Amino acid sequence: MRDVLIVQNSRSGGPGRFGRWLEEAGLRLDVRHAYDGDPVPAKLRHDAMVMLGGGYLPGEDDRAPWLAPTRALVGQALAEDVPLFGICLGGQMIAEVAGGEVTGDVGAPENGSVPVTIRPEAAGDELFRDLPPVVPAIEHHVDAITGLPPGAVWLAETAACPYQAFRVGDLAWGVQFHPEVVPERIRQWEVAGFDPDEVYAGAVADEPVSTPIWHEVTTRFAKLV
Image (cartoon, rainbow, N blue to C red; front, side, top):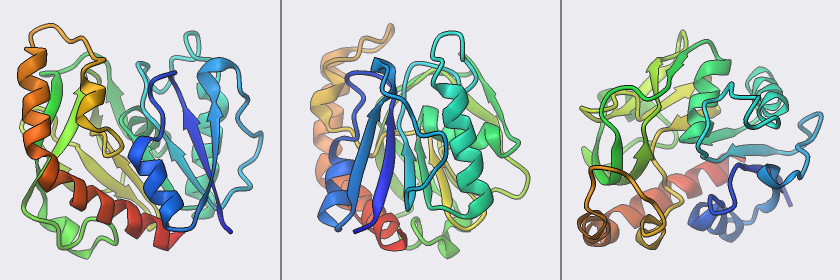
């Protein structure tokens, strides 16, 4: 059985359905609760890695000291072509480690289920090929990728945050949205300027469309692993 390292950055920010789908596809998860002092490995010996989201920028080592060793693991995965998937903070970390740019508190924040446009470049991508032109995805961020790494393939966008999904090399993907989150999780988020009931209702309405799509993307990643 192949092992997947998952780095969790907050108590409530677990792998959710993304992790469950990976297990259903036959993978074994090694979840490190880094926010709670669980150390990340000094060297990546797993068959794949998933970096989850969290309320930090990728380089905020003063607030989250585990980010520095995690960046080293991301760099190793990129260098050694280990399958890698980054969500929100995780996607931002992949972008930054690969030479892109991440900016804090930039542009318009996104919260709740948002229509994400799949770009033409996704037609040849192992994970994002053949998806509908527009897919709902749950968002929760104020920080954003403001420059893709050199040579990255831009896969999805929104008007408020252009770099919603990208690929670096052949086996590393970063997304700004949260494919692991179900609408109930939105109830735990407090974001100024958004009506929580409206945001929750929108996510519930989009769930029948979004769930099978992100399940398919996750299963494709598992098959690559």
